[in-house]
Length: 270
Ligand SMILES: NC(=O)c1ccc[n+]([C@@H]2O[C@H](COP(=O)([O-])OP(=O)(O)OC[C@H]3O[C@@H](n4cnc5c(N)ncnc54)[C@H](OP(=O)(O)O)[C@@H]3O)[C@@H](O)[C@H]2O)c1
Image (tube, rainbow, N blue to C red; front, side, top):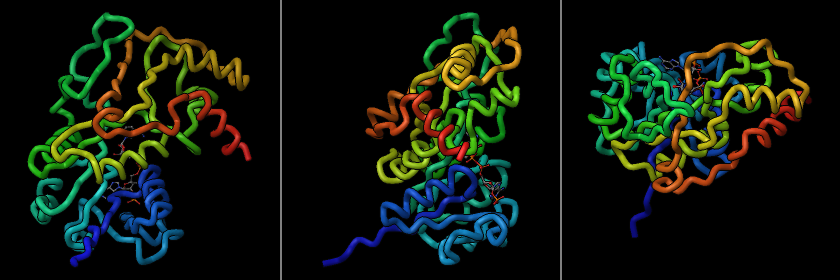
């Protein structure tokens, strides 16, 4: 009887999300390789057999990716010419590719006056003038990549309450869509196994909040005071995650922003 040997799995660009993909993969018994442009500096804590040097801008590093590997692409897929040149070196029919995009792909037109803003699913128009969207769409349509259009990433060390404390955000009627990094990383692994090649999926917790509401809750629950509110003419977006739930069958570990923030506060303040 022949035994199925899984393809190697490589995380291209192992920053905030990629490192969590590695640790969740390891906890599931998967061998997940991670790359950096400077692995000795940035991946010193990862066992050497899982560290690879890879730089999209340096073709001499491309052969470091093991032949036939599946990969999760965790940095902006740009510039297009370089993405295309790298893709030509791959046997794309034999491997699974998951690419992290951004929900900013949907910022195509001037904001409408509709409020609250309409829900956006994967059929909404995307902005092909954006270099990263061009790279993602090339990989999706030519290489069968599964593109994840990701909302704002938060988690330990990327705490929205700190964004309020630091005045990086302030109360406004604008909607924001978020996803906890642990959910995003687990979804990347689920997308490698169950994502349809050539499909796009919105990745968000499905519960858009206004900054007015988040700042008011931050004040009430954590005594975090925001800077003065801003007149924001932008309405933001409301990102639907229905396809993620129904087609990928993913169940969120952190569906409630405020419960997740309570946990992050307790971790970040240790
Ligand atoms: N932050 C957000 O709220 C947000 C929202 C939506 C979508 N996204 C997207 O989601 C993805 C993951 O986000 P993240 O915040 O986890 O990313 P991140 O922390 O910036 O990690 C990406 C890593 O990729 C590596 N990298 C960058 N350019 C590269 C290149 N040309 N060639 C090879 N490696 C390169 C860098 O590591 P080395 O320096 O070690 O090489 C970098 O740390 C990104 O595509 C991001 O744009 C982020």
